Length: 439
Image (cartoon, rainbow, N blue to C red; front, side):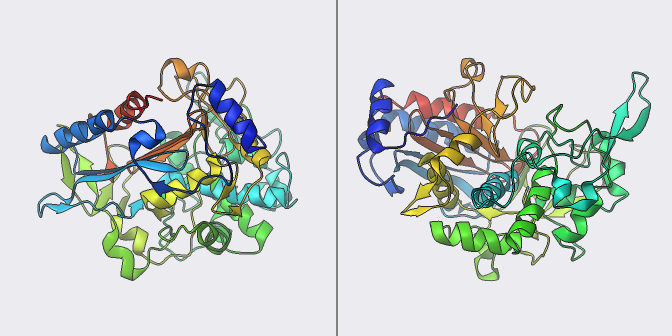
């Protein structure tokens, strides 16, 4: 469980007890550039990140990689290495805009919890209270012989189950593919792309007609839960999700480069996209073809980020930069405040970053799920460098992050890739960050 002290003095005591460098007294930190040594890192050891990335780029296994590491608000590492365009040798810029896919989910979850703090709903409210189409959901049951039947759900999913991916909603893959396709919902919606001018209000009621993959609350199934949550944000706030995120989160925090629709005059900053071939080498491509990763015919133009749309997919439609998303994560690390702007109370942040899924299996390493984030546990701490209480997630198009409250760390690793990554850079990056932390 993440512990967020109520006072600066309490935070100092916690950090000293853990052997960490204390946070300066006063207002929670905003992100500023500083030397690694000023925040307890070794410059020499951090350079190992550069060595690994440069070697993988030189071998053609990666095109370009951008990363940011901050501790107690001090940015100790912020690099973009390699190429945005390998053929033209155009370098990847530190302020490149990335399609962050499922990193959108945490932002939408924060939006919902801001409205929770305003008394708009309770976490265990059935979503049918606000979206009547979910009043009588069904569940797909698969027998031991492989035959499927559809049975009534024992109850509608709750808001909490949307936030924890235990609602039963899935993505249109595997056995759910044809069920979603019958309602005109494809994997393109996963990335916030409708392509037909539909809005959340048009699409979400159709999702309600698709059978759930299990009874609500009984399993963890990753899927469209946060798209439904985004529609609830629209219902509770009376604003589009785009307007809510922009006016209530992005503008107050100074996140100037985060959009559903990247403006035309900024589209040139979008990072180019690369796919891994069967040999593990990267090849640039303008279209993302999902097969053989998914048994579906869809292709996605990587121009989708800058193509005007009105379907604001809260589960995967945003684009952003390293620094913008680091600001968002630093806000969470600060207990809901950044730069004098408070979005959430420390207690709500505690709830969001606590285990909300109990004993349900989330991943093989023992991580659990909070309200919008995966949460590290004692069990996962035996496998991974980030300690219990850390919270994290990522996006299917090559982006990942974690926040470590015990050590005051925010860390992000961004690429734009698809397919089987044999470099394991996302797994190696945390190792290289923590081996450089020496105080």
